[in-house]
Image (cartoon, rainbow, N blue to C red; front, side, top):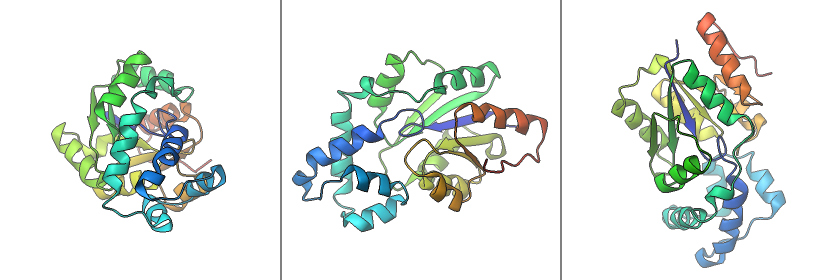
Length: 220
């Protein structure tokens, strides 16, 4: 039975991706990188993070500087970014079930807390931020140890292939959502435990998992 649900932030709760792409283009020249068209941005949704870096020839050394610049700039517009429809209701329902609610992000702690405060969301038991873009497996493992979470009673909700990999590395189940960065096709290819199109399906999965340990999402 699930006791803890951990959510990703960018692309899962907050629709930050359009703003992130705009900020990337704004500072691309500063880092000697090519700008991204809307068509290219859409095509990137079918690639993993490592594939994106290879295709653009972005140096791993440059990544922290680029990411930090975007995080700082995002702070001024974070409250203008919409929350995906239905997510607030999902959070409330999860808490009503007596479950622990957590958030794991590579965005800054300041940005996330500012966003949650603006949207009057005070339901999270913990918010954990680490700026390691490609160490999500280690970060998730650290979070599990920090809060003494039972892996078999913990589930993660995220929008990227790297979320699937991190959960698989740490032995916890994942619900992949199709409204974020990666597309349904590439997520399905990487075989998450559950794949959903709408936020309220999270609650359906929780209810069915409670009633049956053998419940398997059939990728509707």
